[in-house]
Length: 532
Image (cartoon, rainbow, N blue to C red; front, side, top):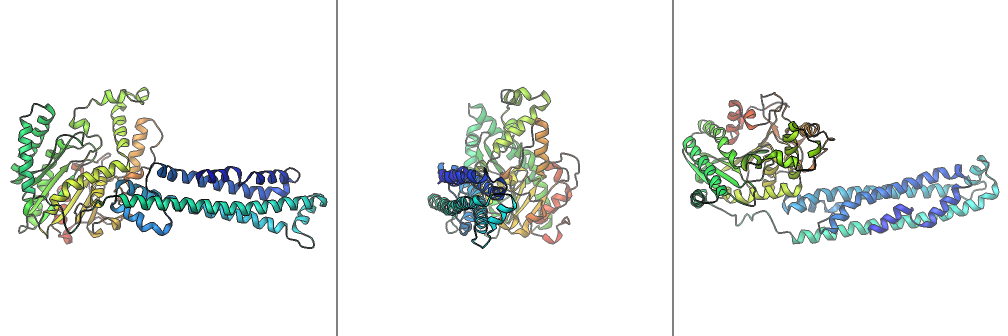
């Protein structure tokens, strides 16, 4: 199919058509000009169609799912909502490709039709035909009319064949897409946990098992495992002192995460009516858990004062691979990495940090990686959250890149009743508040005025300026910005207007933490909302 479309595009259908155009344009360029312009437009349309089809053809060649006709949009949406990371990515490109192919098909067929209409007008056998009048007006000898008429008749026949061939080729292409997509969808395992048999792991049971592993690692001869265990123990001790109780809920010192994964609980999670789940973003990792405890403890204290009869608890999760986290958690020598890379000849000493961050983030910016991290978060937290009391509610606090990953985790079945996006660069595959599995009325966003990550165009330009290269351009995987009014989330006020204010501490003022506690305890009437 691809060669046939390419052949049609490059040759305007058939060699005979090229020959006819040459015959027509040589002796009578004025007469032929409008028709040739139409045919060139047709050629450009066909070539554009081949260009737009190429990515989809590559998807097919690699065994990926592919789009079907517009009537299959529901299948694309289903893939986007949770069939697989690959299907989710292709669901978007599939619908876009089909729309583009259909548009190009209509454009090409319309252009061919216009050319055919022009030919029909020229060859209309009237007493004094349009063609004769045009020839007379352009000082073309009337004895040339029969030859020109014959050329135009050939053109008409060739265009009719071209139109039929194009329609058939594109129909076959879309049909092949549909078959491949359906076959791929049939092979994908379900991701969402069955509501009838939810996976459950009682937090206290998880804690006992993981505490044993941590104690063993503290005695390990492996320096990395010993260091990781010490990090986890220090976070647990701090949480115990400040919140009165702590639990070890995720303990993963080795692969698949380069810097490991860690999550601790504050409070009585086994019996909590309200649970806050927080995760960080760029630059965070297991070593960041302890630094988040102070903020989380303040939110829990506010919540307890608002609703002393209910139990509130929290989970600090750092189990996914955040960009730029290895530097903090694994003592990586940034300079040696950057200066060994392809940009080394162009990097000044003061640019090393910017280059490293940019390269780290660009490596992270792939739909497959976002889906992988979202699945990881969902797989580790879903069994724990499923074990909460039936009437318990879960509020997500997703900071920075955690907003992309956490939003994806919800698509993969992680329970959540509300979400606060803090300094978010986007929500990944979640296209709006309405397409999330969370009630739009309980979706909130905080974006500092000069936070370069919360206003993604700014940080793309900043990286580009720091690297001395052209703008990085749109990064589709980030998804829409939840701070955009069109997204549909509710805006919470912020106060830090300093340039570059992105860290969680720049957002979590006493007023912001009071707001978060009100949302956590579902006392929405006292939440202070920022007017749009």
